[in-house]
Length: 384
Image 1 (cartoon, rainbow, N blue to C red):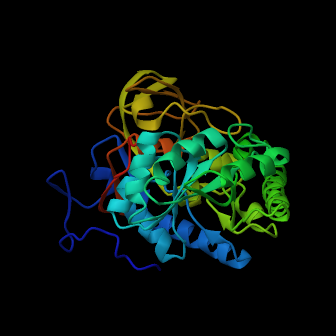
Image 2: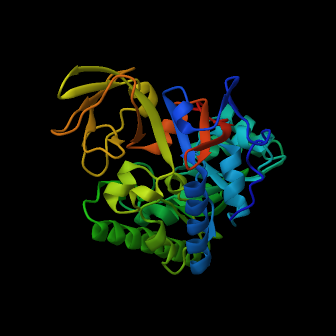
C-alpha cells in the first residue's frame, strides 16, 4: 500500500466533521461527496503500472480532482508531473509545491501570459496551443522578459474540438517555432470522442488511432526539422491502448482516479473501481413511483451519462435511478418492487466525477465505511 502521508492527522479513534465527532459515513450530513481511499490508491497504482509497462511517462490530468493531496499520491506512484486546464489551477498547484505542470489547453492573451511568466520562475511549465495567434499572445510577454515558453501543438485525432489537422501540423508548427519567446516542445491530443463509443471494441479502436495519428504526426514534424520531445496522449478510456502505440512518450488520463458511471458504461472499469460516491438523503416520497433526494444539479451536475444518456446517477444497491434533476432536487424513478423512506441515506455513483469535484469545496475521505478526514478541493472554480 502507498504511504499514507497525505491524510490529515486526527487524534486516534476520533474523527471530527464540522466540530462533531464521527466514525462512520452514515453519520455524515448530506449531501456529501465521499472518496474511498482504498479504491483511490488502487486506481492510482494500476494506472502507474500500465504506464511503466509501456515505458510511457504518466502526467495525470489533475482537473479531475483539483486536490493537491491526490496529486501527491499520483507522484508518489511514479507520475512525472501533472496536467491542468487553467492558469488559476496551475497557480494553486504551484503554491502547493508542484513544480512540473502542463496546461493542456490553448491558453491565450497577455494577462494570462503575465501570470504564466510569474509561474515559470518556480515551475517547469508548458502550455497547449493550436494556432499562431494564441501562441504569439504568450510570446509577446515572454520575449521582452528574455524568456521562452514551451508549448505543445494540439493535433486533432478525431474529436473535432480544438487542434490542427495532422495534414496542417507542419505548417502551423513551423510558424509557431519562429515566434519570439516560444519554443515547441512537442505535440499532444485528446480522444474525447471515445466517450461516444458504444462498445469496448470501438473504444479500443479509437485508442489505437489516437496514438497512431499523434506518433505519425510527430515523425512528420521531425522529418521537417522540427524538434518533438513530447508525444502526449490523454483520455481515461483510451489510456491503455494509446500508451501502447510505439512513439507515444506521455499519457494524461484524469478520471481514472475516481472513475464514474460513464466509465462503467464504457467498459473502462467496474463499479468496484469507482472511488467517488455522493451520500444523499431521501427528503420526500410523494408517490410510490417517485422519491426525492437532497442532491440536484448543484451537487451532481447535469452532465449526461456516456455513451448513452440515461438518468443522472446510479443509486448503489438499487435498480432505481435518478431520473430528473433541478438545482436542489434529485428525483428518483422508483422501480417496481423497490421503495424508499424519508430520512433514508443512499450512495450515488455520479455520471461524471470531474464535474462533481468542481461543485464542492471539500470531500470526505474514507476507508470502507469509516471516515478518515476531509480534503479541500483547492483548485475548484479556477476557470481563468
